[in-house]
Image (cartoon, rainbow, N blue to C red; front, side, top):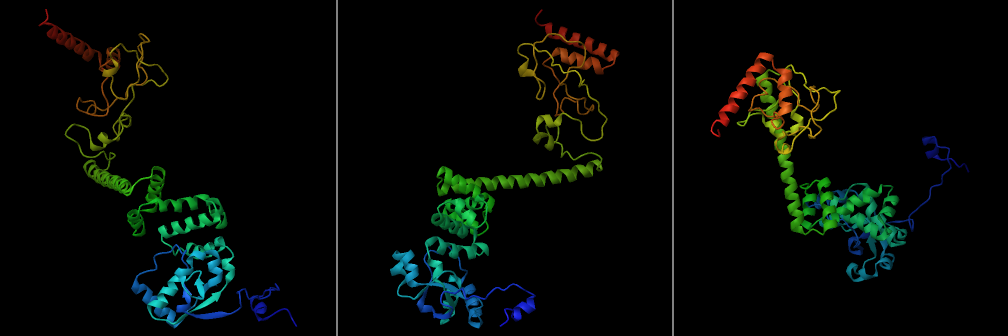
Length: 387
């Protein structure tokens, strides 16, 4: 007799692989629902609404495409003898297919097609792997159910790594799921309803685990996180509105800086770090007073630190320097930006030497002499009452 068959010819398969019946007794049973029991270690709890089960039951009444894997009562009780009273005097226990069992019960079906395979009940680890893997692989669990399913596997396998290796996943895959088991019940309900994103839920689960947070503490953390997310979204909207407003006002020639405020400057300048506002913006011509090749710090005297502007270099008592522009001075701004009310740069009033150098490098001689005269008059006027 030839070793080839019609399937070999159709599939062009030369491999002589025998067909083997892998079922425990080689037979498919139609088991009455009254002789079946769901297992009591199934981590799945959400089987859909009553209407969902009725619709599914009607479909099963027309045709059951997938039989339910079951084990005998004796094989199951060898693993969990304490369940004897709870499962009652049935013949078979479901390995998976509890939703099919509930749907069939909802429409009054008399039985379900089942395949008996006591090999699933060799030990608890094998049984739990069979219970969980179908739902995990097909993503039938919600996130919280999956967390408890993975936790039950860790209990049987002995470690997170053993479960990860069995399912060919990274170790973090196990850890991230188990974190959800540390959430309080109301927070888990939020996860199920998509009201708490998984990223935040796992962060909260880790905090709850590490700090033994109560339900109130977990709720307070999530409330604060929601406020932070709202504030960030509102800021993005304001920035977008500011850019549009500035674009219309400037004809698109300058970057958006937001509307002017009563205290001078713009909203954007008030929110940016001080160091981010030391460079000129837009297309206005500018040059720098800093000599980059000169890496010296300007001198200072006692008591000047408190008067130094934000963003200026720390001053030392190194003594007088050559009349070159010291490194670290802010870049020259446009006349409008150098007005007293403008934000973004403070004139170095705390150091007379830096002030003199800055004015000497950028003022014409006649204007500098006029300034010198004016300063002298002001000093005489202030000293007049004391004399």
